[in-house]
Length: 76
Image (cartoon, rainbow, N blue to C red):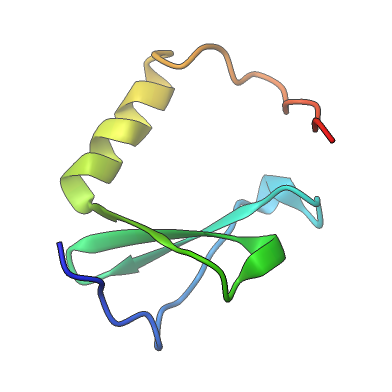
């Protein structure tokens, strides 16, 4: 997959993350989904096809990655 043009991307993060130190932002661009770290917005960006992203979200919802009923404690 080619890297999409992210210059005009509309980045979003969960409203549940508030101003927490460990957040990611997501942008939907063409047929791709981009993910970046809010602490380093100019750093690397992970890019997934929309079907890959849908499978990931489906796995979260079905509990494939464990329980996410409460936020994880940060590990520093």
